[in-house]
Length: 333
Image (cartoon, rainbow, N blue to C red):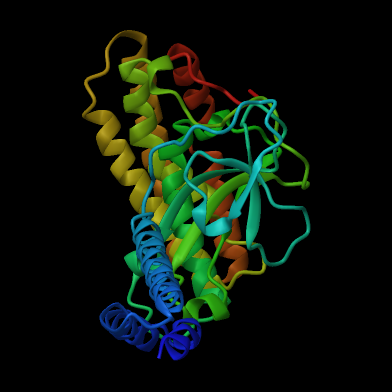
C-alpha cells in the first residue's frame, strides 16, 4: 500500500495522500517495512497541494490587479537611469512607466520598463476599460469600434497627465494598445494609452508628466478650463473620414467652446489677465458659430471651409498672450 500510495502521490495526489496516511498507520501498528515510502507519499502529495494553492492565489491576485487598472493611476517610480530595464508583460504596465517595446511590432506581449531619465520609446499616461464607454458584450466588436473608443478615452485622459498639452514636443504624439480578438475571449477589455515619437525614435529628457507644484493656481485653473477643447483638437478626424464623422466632431467642438467661454467668463480674472480673457471669450464665441455651421453642413467643401474658419477665429494669438502671462508653455510661438 505504501508503494501504491507513492505512485498515486505523483499522478493523482489526493488519492496518494489518503493511501499514504492509511499505509503509515498500518506500518506503525504492524511494525512492517514501508514507513519511508508512506512518509514520502504524504510529503509529495502535500507539496503538490501547496503548489496548487500558491498558483491559485497568484492568478487570483493578478486578475484583481488588472481589474483595478481602469482610469488614470498614480505614478510608479521606474528603475534608476543606469538600470538596463526589466521585462514585464504589457498587461503589467502602470501609468507613468517609461518603456520600450521594439519598433514596428504589430502585436506586443512584453515590454522593457526603463528609467524615464534614460532613452525610451514610450511613456504610458492612461489605462481604462472600454466598457466605461458602452456595453460591448462577449462578441469581439472589431478593431474600428475599439479605435473609436481608444481615441476618445486617450484624448480625454491626456490633459490630466501632462497638464499642458502645449508643452508636448511637436514630434511626440499619443498612441494606444487595444485588445486583440484572442485576448478578448479571455476577458481583455483594457486600453493602454502612451506617448511616443511619431517617427519611431526614442524619447529623452525625462518624463512628460506635468508637475502641479510648478504651476500657479491661476495657471492650473486655465488649463483645466481649456482642457476639453485641447483634447478635441487632438481627435480631429482624418481627411478620409466620412462627412458624418466630421460633422459630429465639429458639433462637439462647438459645445466644448461654449462651455469653455462660460467657464472663462465666470472665472473672476483681474488686471491684464481679465482683459485678455474677455478677448479670448469673444473670439471663442465667434469661432463656435462657425463650428455649429460646420456641424450642419451637408457638402464636404462647405464643411472644410467652415472648419478652417473655426480654427482661424479661435483666438490663438490671445491664448499665447495669456499663456505668457501665466508662465505657461507657448509651443512654437
